[in-house]
Length: 347
Ligand code: PHE
Image (cartoon, rainbow, N blue to C red):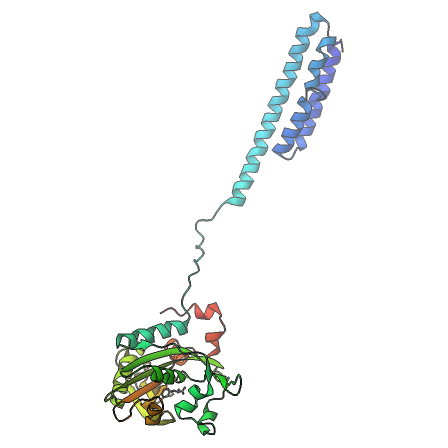
């Protein structure tokens, strides 16, 4: 290329092309790529212009160089302007997509809480613990002997029907009551005995207030001169601490083969305080547990002299207390692990 006119028309064509290309370019990245191609020293439309310098007569070299520099500067200015405009738009878009609305309510941090049964169990353990009771942990699999026979419920006793049992074999079963633990304690410990024993029990029973698996807290005291008065005294302390001040107990005659006399323990209604409400079925009283004076036969069977020692025992339904305390009307709600239910109960 020896002619500057030829160069000039070439430069006009390049300018036109750049102008039209930049009009439709969509991103700063595309601007960068396009610029790189143009300026490429070997093949770029602008970059390669310098290669031609050798073919230019000496007297035109200065003019040629000047024109090439001019178009370089011009092109750079075009690129810079478009790049700045696109970058600003891109930043704006990014800020918008990443922006946080600080006025939105914060996401509540998930907070765990203990299962209602665990809460009630811990409360009961604390209450009886403060009265000097120790914890005995029984086993969920028991023998027929500990669950029934030793508790004065022999093979053909009708009381076995009260507790529909899951047998694992003729000898082994899932305990139907934590009372089985009483026998283990009395066989291995000498009076004075003062234990509570929480745990799962199992009965083939299933409706809104019964579940095949539920939880009990056994209590057993054996010492000299222990009577039903001691039982009621302790239970009065217990119900007041669990259900609130002023709540007290009432004992009604009942029957359990392992206690004599046996009682059903009611608490005065902690909701209406005796006036009558749906919770106490308008009686002013709510049945909460079974208890009694340990049957002499049971003491003797465990090698405890019933002429010297006497005992009281009680069996609290932990689930029942939890349902009453927290207004749960279906025992299944306690065992379905629905966090929307369980999360509401945090004492
Ligand atoms: N074990 C009895 C039941 O499950 C409750 C109970 C315990 C009664 C201790 C008297 C003494 O129904």
